[in-house]
Length: 308
View 1: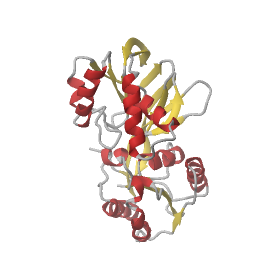
View 2 (view 1 turned 30 degrees about the vertical axis):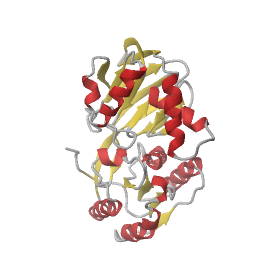
View 3 (view 1 turned 60 degrees about the horizontal axis):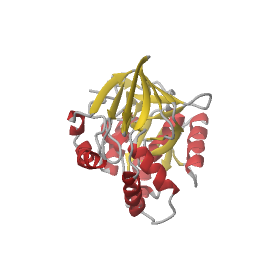
View 4 (view 1 turned 90 degrees about the vertical axis):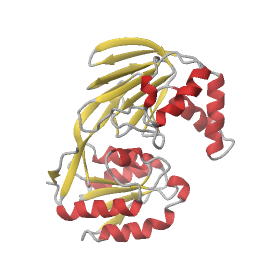
C-alpha cells in the first residue's frame, strides 16, 4: 500500500495542466473542457499549458513549476507523463496523471482509475485535502549528459529496437508502421552482448529482452517487470536470453500477464542502481525515445508526490 503524507507544498499557485490532444489517437479530446472544469472544483485557478512539440511541452512544465504552480496535472498517456516528470521529480510540487493515452501504465500502476473523469475526481479530492502519496522514480544518465527521469519502464532490448525502427519509417502511417517494424526486426533478430551491473555486481549475457522497471508495465498493460513496486526503493530488471524468433513469438504474449518470467531463458533481478551497456541500442523510457546505452539508472525513493 502506498504511504499517505500531508502535502507541504503551498497551495497558492494555479493547477498547471499539460494536455496532449493527440493522445490515444484523440479519443478523449472532447473530454478536455469537462476535465478542466472538474479540476477547477478544487478551488484553485487552472492554467492550461500550451506547447506544440514534446520538447516545448517539457519546457512549459518546467516554466510552470518555476513560476509557482501548486500542482501539475497531465491529460494524456505515458509520453505526456514522462514530459511532466522531468519538471516535478525531486520537487514538492504534487502531480496527477489523467489517463487519456494509448498506454497509461504509470497511472494504472500507481493507483489511478482508468476512466479520465474518475481520475479527475480523485485528483480533486487530494487537492482539497492537501494529501499526497509519494512514489519512487528512476533517474538515469549517460556519460556527461543531462539526467532524465522515468516513472514506468525503460526498454533496452527488442522492444526498443522496434521503436527505433518504427520512428525511422515514413510509411505506413499509424499502427501498421509499428507492426511492420516488428516484422523487420524479427527477421534481423540476434542476441546482443550486454554488460549489466547491479549495485556494482557485474553480469554479462547475450540477450534480446532487457527491461528496467520502476513500475510493472509498459506498452499499454504488458507486465514486463511484474514484481516491480514503485514504493520499495528498488528497480526490477528482467532480461530474456538467447531467444530465437520462434521462441520470442511464443513468449512475448505472456508478458501481458507477467508469466514470461517463468521461462527458463528469463532472469529477474532487483537493485538500487543499474548500469547497462550494449552496442547500438537507444533506450525507450515511458515509451519515449531516451538515452543511448551505456546508461546508469538509480531508484530515487519518494521522488514524486501523487495526487491521490
